[in-house]
Length: 306
Image (cartoon, rainbow, N blue to C red; front, side, top):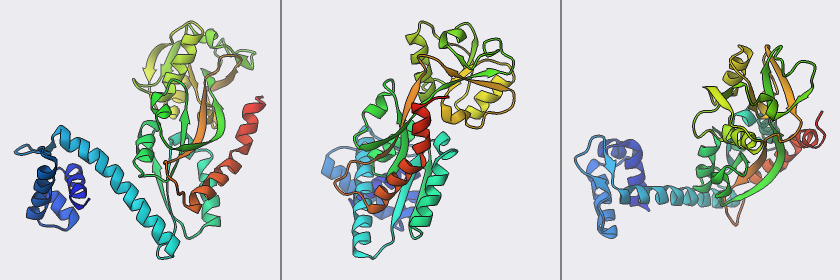
């Protein structure tokens, strides 16, 4: 494992000298660790003579598994130290941006008041980044979302607790003809409009596109962004219409009209997820309970839309 950790550091730093400095080793010691791994595997792991340093396919494979194994060993060491009372509690918590700007701060504040000694680390990342971190054991807990079109979420091997359903809503320029005199609209009302959508591979817009196709049209995208504030700013400027998650319109800017969708509204399922493990520290269970509590009103809103 020592040699594998050296290889992981080498991959992260890009050179033998930088890896040696980060690990507190000599450059010769780093080279010896890598050479020993290559003898054991019978495969070259590093492409010598390349700048910046490049790994072979075998090297990349070993780094991918090595990072996961290192994370699990680190978690095991932390858990044992907590049980023995030699180390304080920690929580490595991840979340996607719209959750971080709505219900997550209240949950973190409640955890801090209940468990003031917990060392808290918060990772702000998109769904595509959170799931690998959970699978590799880099995070103890993360707020995620899923939908049938998101294959990566379905492949997640850990546990999850459903929190609430986040129903998407239509966002239109103020005074738009579709919004006039109406509290709700249909997706099909927007079929001929110019749309503000997400970039290629965007998780949220994959959900929107799936819903639109299900009712017979493909949205005609004129501008793209994965920043919901930018999406709403484009809409406010009259550059298109959009359908975005309900969490994202909690504080809609001036210049837009927000309307609920009567039927076929896209929905993403918000959950709190944790890595597959036989043992979960008490602080993980505590945080799950807190998240369930602070999102109770959102569950009620999903059941009884206005």
